[in-house]
Length: 138
Image (tube, rainbow, N blue to C red):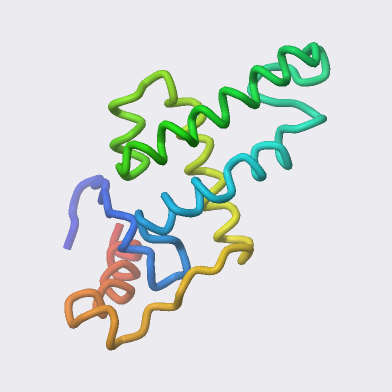
């Protein structure tokens, strides 16, 4: 039993049984959808800057920054957390990409393959039960 305040840091696969993307799936979804997500959520209303007060040139430059982030991320072949740590100039967009990737998974908008018992292996099958136990104990 945990007797003191404890933080459990779990990898992306720990929530896989609950329909969240694995690290690889999150990476693929970011590469495939981030420009679309960015323009949907931060397009004509606002952005990381102030979209309504930006000139057309500034808006184009910002979208170029988003596309450059995706291009660099795709070429890196790294998971998003490692990519951000090695490319701090992309950190703001990288963190936003993670949030939007998880948000769209929660909304059921992404095709996340279900994990079957035969796919997950003996140890992984215990993750949902153990995770619930950890949350209840904490």
